[in-house]
Length: 269
Ligand SMILES: NC(=O)c1ccc[n+]([C@@H]2O[C@H](COP(=O)([O-])OP(=O)(O)OC[C@H]3O[C@@H](n4cnc5c(N)ncnc54)[C@H](O)[C@@H]3O)[C@@H](O)[C@H]2O)c1
View 1: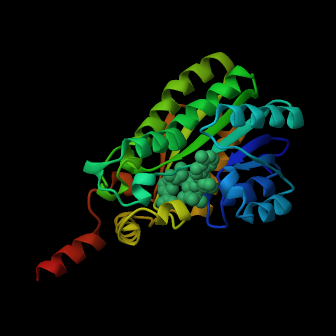
View 2: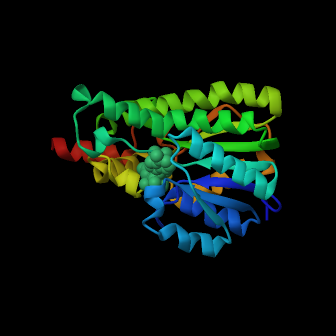
């Protein structure tokens, strides 16, 4: 029960495969209370109500690109709980990726939308929380990222740029939030994970398998990601802030693995 008595908001549970779904299940099991939020269009799919019933949570819609929605959600959360202890930003979407537009021919209206939903929303969220003084001291805010922020994965396209911005916001806002309110801000850089957002990236199966073979521990599953998120919400990680934390089975620091060497050698035979 490492989250006993803690209150928060979890964004991004679309269906049972969502990383946010696993976080919500575990946070509930660890004693937390929270509001579940997603874009109104995602709420219409209805699956989130099943999660809400299971975790005894309220669902409040919020399109994270809209300031008014964000204000209403944070006001509702504070009215319900008082100040919050944790927030999960588990949100990403790219129309250019969805429409399979090549990186060198991107549509800029779509790109604005991608950056707004997938990165600027993180700043908007933190700015709203800070303005409303909605977080308790030692509170924790976590967003999910991917290693394409540091290294090129061509099919990840503009989402790589969105993730770079997201990670930068964690550092920059993390400084201000730490200094003024002792609130932690981090991103977790997760292995490829078979979810709706993940599988939408071209060649997903290939880079899922590649990462799995490259990582000494194999790809980190979403349940393990939930464990890590919950540890970052807990009091055991109070002095971790402004970090991008790799949760990837060792992928990020592996140059080549013996599994991949074997494949390369065989392909040359
Ligand atoms: N799946 C992967 O391989 C992987 C790897 C690393 C990081 N991530 C990141 O994890 C996070 C969660 O993604 P997931 O893999 O669980 O997929 P998912 O599709 O289950 O979750 C993405 C969520 O973003 C929400 N969303 C989209 N537009 C929104 C808007 N305007 N307002 C509010 N919410 C909106 C969707 O409704 C959905 O719930 C994302 O940031 C994603 O980039 C995923």
